[in-house]
Each structure stands twice: as structure tokens, then as C-alpha cells.
Image (cartoon, rainbow, N blue to C red):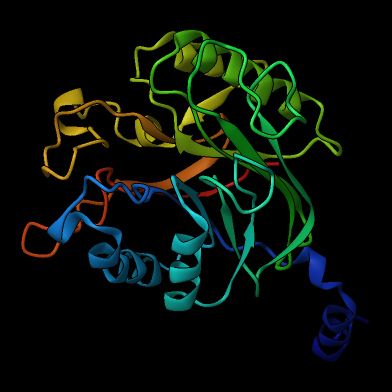
Length: 284
């Protein structure tokens, strides 16, 4: 006879891995590099507390940042504890130059593997660029295990070129090749500043891939016009510029919410890009 006490005893023997995972909350944030031409409220020193507050208040599980120098990442870590940083500087594979760093909540995820590759014909060579781009471009990735259910997924964070269309399209191809070779095959997240609007062939190439990524924003906001979907605003607060920042997920993902964060303090913005957020659950 099955009794309530028997059921409780059986439940106590179930492994933690059968617990349902909480939804994933992901933030993508181009921090705006330390540019000598930025003055007053646009300097990094003036913006870093605001950046820290946005990240801290948002409580994202995972964050992909772009245009982050080593000192900027140190400033963020000081203001927002609890995240493990993954990534390297693009100029030497060490600490020099911009990072496309991934920040991972320590209490929720175990990092099983990670790396950075250069968007070029020689992806393992630091500072390499071969597709008519003057600026070095990289992608940082991680294989993560969610401690709440034991499931594995992959996270990619990148910053495509702002000038060369060839570099954008071939950069997407390289990321897709890396994604196709992942082992074990598992869900994925791709974040980044793609420097490409929604009608750019690089974005079309990504969406047409066999893994069928979807833009989390458009998945929930198909009817919001481009004039209200901009993510790059040049510190102006405009919403009608191009949407070039994305959070891509598999097409069967259950999307819960997606937002473009327009936070500012008296008209002063934390970056020249709006951070973007998506909350979702993988369907396995």
C-alpha cells in the first residue's frame, strides 16, 4: 500500500537534477569603451556607478558585455559581486584590448569549458583579422551547467565589425560553425553587438542556420516598429536608431519577456547603447 509517508521517502531519494530549472534571465550590454573623446557625464568614470546599478538591479543570471577594457571589468566586479568572469582581451589573448566577456552567476552555474576565438581565417591566433576589418573582432563562449537541474547549455558573446560586411557575415559563419560542433549538443544563447540592423544579410544568415536561432526581442514584439526598437543611440536617448544588439535563442525556446532598457539619470545614459534583456526557458 502506498502511503503519504512512502511518497515522502521516495521524494527524498530523488536527485537534485530532476528539479525544474528557473527561467534564465540574460542581459547583453555594450558598455562603451574608454574613449578619450568622451567628456563630462559620458566618461567611464562618470558612468560606471550607473552601469553597476543597472546590472545589480537587473539581477541577470548571465551577462554578455562588449567594449569592456580590463579596468572596466574590474570596476563592474567591484560594484556587482557574485559573478564569474570569462574572456580575454582581443589584442593579445590576455588582458590587452577590448573583451567580449561573459559574466556568470557563481551560485547558479558551473563553468565546464570556455574559450575565445578570433573572427578571422585563423581563429586561434590572437589579434588576427583577415576579412577587410581594421578592428580585431572576437567571440567568447562557455559551456555551462545549471546547478538547479543539471542541464548543460552554451553561451556565446560577440561584437561584429562596424565597417566590413564581409567580416560580419564571415564572423557569423564562424560562430555557427563553432556552434554546430558543440559537444554535447545542447541549447544555446548568442548575445552581442552585431553592428547589423534587422535587415542585414549577416542577421539573415544567422536566422537561416540549421540551429534556427530567433531574436528574443522580435519573438515577443513582432509588432513594435523599427522606430521604437533601436539599441544604439549615441548617448542621445533616441529610440529610432538601428537595432544592432541581440539575444538569440533556439526557436523552440519559451520566451517570457524581452526588454530594451532605457534607464538614465537626468538624461545621462550609462552607455551609447541600451542594454537589452530576455527571460526564457529552454524546451528540450
